[in-house]
Image 1 (cartoon, one colour):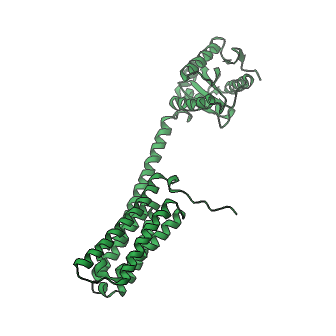
Image 2 (image 1 turned 135 degrees about the vertical axis):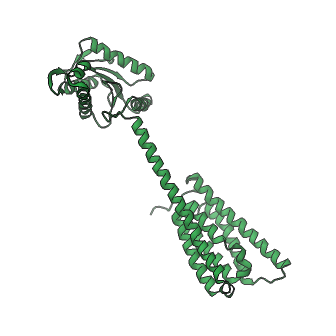
Image 3 (image 1 turned 90 degrees about the vertical axis):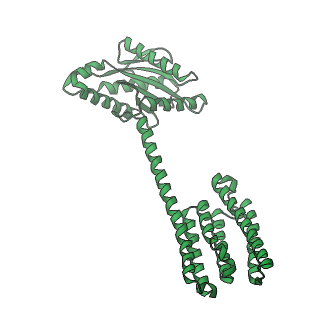
Length: 364
């Protein structure tokens, strides 16, 4: 049987572990101050303090001191610590208010503070649970205590405050959390839109450069291999002249579909200019594989037709360069030069930096 492993507070979210330790120290300080208050009241108030109350305060002080070690080591899981602390805090406080309501009345706010502290550490569920448990205990304590029976409206107000204040704080926290998530979703959608080409739905230039930088870093670290392809349509002006801008847009979308269908899900496709596309083909380090893929792309694009103009052919020229240790600017410049070399050599072909060989679209 595997031993139980408890999470160290230092490995929790820093703000949460810090809040829990802060609440533990706060509990010990408040218990010590209250013990001092009782001492002062006993000396100068000339009023005896019951042994039950003294024993209860001593028990709470011992609990507050021991709980520092419980949290620091830690000896219990976070959920168990939260539940145990809620039980001990609210039970001992309610019992103290029942024992001597007149003397303990100045700390009627303590159950509220416990509930709010639990909410900060464990979330709104614990704030609500702690306040509901405290209200139930206080209802029992006040209804059976002669002192609080003589002050029914004040007792009712304390019980209501014990429930309403933490619940109100919890509802506000949940509303703020929902608002933050909504802002994050909007920001993510805006960031995605800023990196996406509105016509084709693939990456735009900004998105492509970010993806290229990320993939190039992996290649520099030896974690992956990939090639960059820059593809430019040949004579796209003739497409626009034949089909108008709507026909040109339809061809660009068709080219995008061809590229996506010919590539794998791990590859990246982008429209980085008017009729220019960028491709990051992952897990390719061999010249033959890169050139085979380029030929496949050219063949797919050749099958596109301009609606209403069957004589207009759609072809492309491609430059290929492996992602290497050179800078991105040099990589893009070299690949772009290879693409234009292929275009000047007759179009509908590619040029690869692997061996500087020009290959046609029909190479398989």
